Amino acid sequence: MAGRTFNSSTSRRARALRGTLGAVIALTLLACVPAAGAAVLTAGGGARFGVQPLSAEGDPVAPLASSVLMAPLARPAQASVDQGIVYHGGPVLHGVTTYAIFWDPDHAFAASTESLVGGFLANVAHDSGGSDDVFSVASQYTDAAGSAQYAQTYGGSYVDSDPYPTSGDCGETTPGAPTCVTDSQITGELASFAAAHTLATGMGSLFVVLTPDTVVTCMDGGDQCSNNTYCSLHSYTGAGSSTLLYIEIPFTELGSASSAKGCQDDGNSLVQAPNQDPGFGDVALKSLSHEMLETISDPLLNAWYDTAGNEIADLCNGVTWSPDAFLPVEGGEAAAGTLWNQTINGAHYYLQGAWSNATGECALSSSPLPIFSAPAAPVARAPLTFDGKPGTNAAVNSYAWSFGDGQSAAGASVTHTYAAPGVYTVTLSVTDGFGDTGSISKQLDVTAAGRTAGAAGARAPRRTTLRCGRVRHRHGGREVRHCTRTVVSHSSTRACKRVTHSKDGKACNTVVRIVTRRASCRSVRRGGLTKWSLRCAAAVVVRRRG
View 1: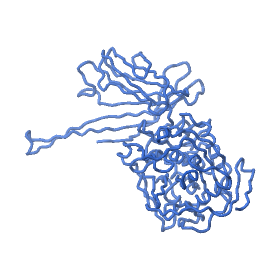
View 2: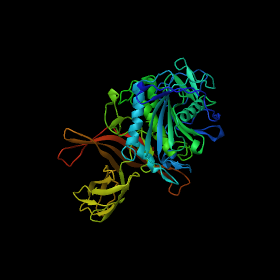
View 3: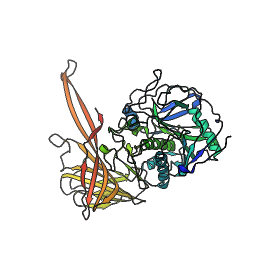
């Protein structure tokens, strides 16, 4: 083993020299190109990879003519989305220490990028146990021992100065990226580096390996590489105390703004970088959070994923997958490339959401956004029962109801009577043990006895839901929070045609169409007032049926 040297100029990051690569079992890739939207690949010997696919939005680094380019990705099949994430019997993580390893013998990473990544991991560790960022969403997924815990410790950042291997089966090199390393070479290097630095392995440790934009990484024995297929991946080797959980974050696509958008599929033309890191570290953090979420909920790739192989971050990987993958936005300007949607230990980041089985949609936090049920055909002057519950796994301490007629109530299940017919906005607000609040509003069409809402001559059936998070910031005497408004509308069309075999000479068919639209909103309340004003962006159709 070669001697190790440390460079204090890397600000708490050690640069280590190591000798021979550790041995690992080579994996033979079975699948050549993942199906559109699918993100779990199976390799020889039963090994699996969870990948974050490149989207069609960016401009991938041009590979050799012999390489296999991934087809443009499509949204997952609706049946897969409707079923949600399914448990397959494997473990989840109940706490983990995360290490960042920059494999960078040529010192290609900018100091700002190293600092941003290390700071992000430290901030995530600082806020562990809370409910106000995307990592808390994973805690609704369980195994026999309990919930996946938002319980992270930061183990530090290291720079590995070992040279890259000069041989292997990597075939995706380009003039702009002359170095190519395989997954087995990365895991071999990682195993030796961890041993040399006495870093603990096992299910309680997670290693993030980052390589600069001069390097292409590839899965063993195939054409699936970081310049044509994936932005990042997670997997594992070994078993028991020798288990090596790892994430690969290649910066191959992060050498320019045009290619970086392939790893930030948010529908905006500019790269959104709230920390303005010139090395596109902001985009890398989106990939890193994606893989961290999936490692927490599916560390051995046998726990939580849907019928198509999508893990909890895959269904929210970008607008190709879900239009609200990055919503709600908390601040910044898209035209300036400064949007941010997460505040973690006071720092701003632009991350994607994670799929929540509890709410059936992408979520950026598990703050107590509630759900409630109301009578389907409410009638005036009759007692109506409303039942509320958490829409996430957050523990709710209190429930407060407003019925839109000046009356209110408290409690998870309440009864209310409307004195007159009309359309009323019912709001349920909840508070969790951290003092975080969330609310949801629905419009209720209360009719007089004998009239049915949505009948001929009445309003077309439509359900509007407004979900608001906690107050994010206060300035100038105003409180600001961000909300999502969802409108589900129903329409039906009856069509008949003449037929000879029917008793009445015609056959009729009724087609019911359901359209769901969603919009990101900004809610503001001025000091001393109780009423919130609401401004929403244009609604986007997120689902059609019928």
